[in-house]
Length: 226
Image 1: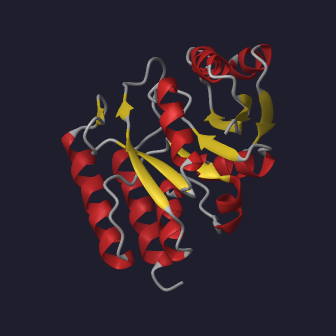
Image 2: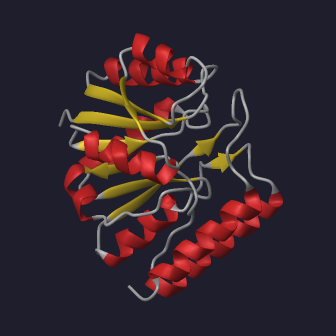
Image 3: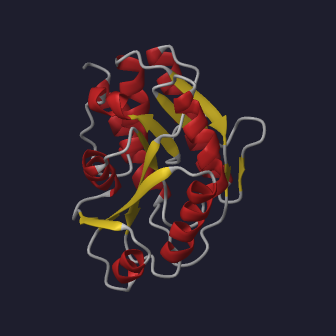
């Protein structure tokens, strides 16, 4: 089955990375003859992120809120029957797109990259973040009866019909956690596949460990009664 793939990439001042990300995505999808679109959701970057993305054929839309809002906007704009979310900092390896697409082709609603399955891993996870991720995974698994191994990782694929069933509202870094919770609530078929997280290639990361950890915990707690 040759799908139409939409790759959604939120950006903010990623001029040193976005060209390589888009080139990597194109090289994989074109080699395997997939039809595709690349959607860059930009928060009005002050550098040449948008200029570079446009020059490589990406569709540009703008969103002034956080990562969650950008992903929601990108998913709504996507035309593909398979939608992939991907970071702009070269931490996600383009060749893993094939595994994420295969998960949807196999009949799953959502396919989630996991750094904690055999074959996965991370070059960018200090001990405190590792502990925090494990705590959040255990908490969501306990509350919703799931078997996730990873929670706060954005390399994922979605069947288009599944996206319409996810009632997403998170504007910031709680979005991946909200997606995991929504998957459980809507009884969607989910598959985790191994993913290896690389170090950010260039520029300053947006993650703030304690601040974003609090946001993730708040996302879990506020969804418990819904």
